[in-house]
Image (tube, rainbow over all chains, first blue to last red; front, top):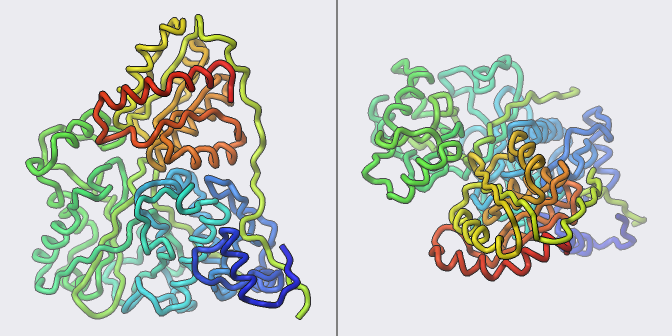
Length: 347
Length: 177
């Protein structure tokens, strides 16, 4: 790709018309910019991280950097994007199914560890919203990689029935300063001073307003009754999909000060967050009993659980002041698991 | 300002191009396998096709049902189909991820030596073709039935769509595209 013109508008229009953008203006991935990003991180541009389905474009460091440049990433964000791509291409993520699904799942890029401070990735007020370059551009870079290397063009390939604003970019960080428990990646076997990316196919955040909760018991009851949505894939497919809950700091403090462990939260939710069978349509009951590998094992008479096991509740702390939390339903593919990868920086 | 060079953000794929297996010359005497991904109504669609195929001389039809829509066909089923059947029909691709995996099954069976085709609806055949190309089988046969076929469509309408698909189906099985 080469241009004689010097007009930015022309470049813009060309990238858009070739289907290489998410619809927003991009930073042109000039050879100089891409090489500078790769060199800044002391990486081999030809090293291959994996192939991005369904198109199976080869994700070399150079191609990842080209998309990161287009998204507006600073040079130092590249290792985060690379770790995310390692997660997307790991066996057990099923990006092949996820890229094409009619469900509105976005590629959530969740960062935990000290790098969120180094790179100024927002984990506080508005962490899931606009205003921070790192959140906005890292999430966007992952979407551009899915589009360009993966070929997931909305319409012909990305068949998401309605789409989702989270598909533009869905990157946020854990607020470890306000987290009464171990960091998320520590629970997953990494060291506290590691920084990690967890990628997962999730819907955008659904609010849990717990403004009148004073005790852990009250709050857990609100959460349990917020996440039992019959229209969510967590309810439909309980074959091992995770359900992501981002507690606001003030909610986390209520639980923390009463000494409620994450294990206890998971067990409470596993026991109480169930859909009453008398509310479930007969058609669904019939499908559920006929194809347990897709819908999850069920005895046909108990209230229906929304995850296979307590461990499928993934818990973190995100955000600033206020008594709001949120949950993010899973895409629901039976072979889809969240992947946590360590971010390796050269500096 | 001089000449500006950009790095193509899409780049190369590692797709090979694998030819299709030879197709059967005629329908008479064929043994055909269905690989059903459990999508709603595909069983009714296959029921009707199964009723009609003997008229064309098909001697045996085997029905396999996957445990779910977003898993690949098992090696055991592939082995059995290869040992006992001449042709395989996978489906149904009428959503995103189920299309991906139904197409995957047709590609895997084809690469395993079994002539195959994948049934999708007309809203999902382009996706299936993109995926087939990336998997090295750009010519894999796709029978696109007018969308919708799945949940919500009464069984009698499903059977009518099967009737209307027969001519194309026979053509795909015996002479390719």
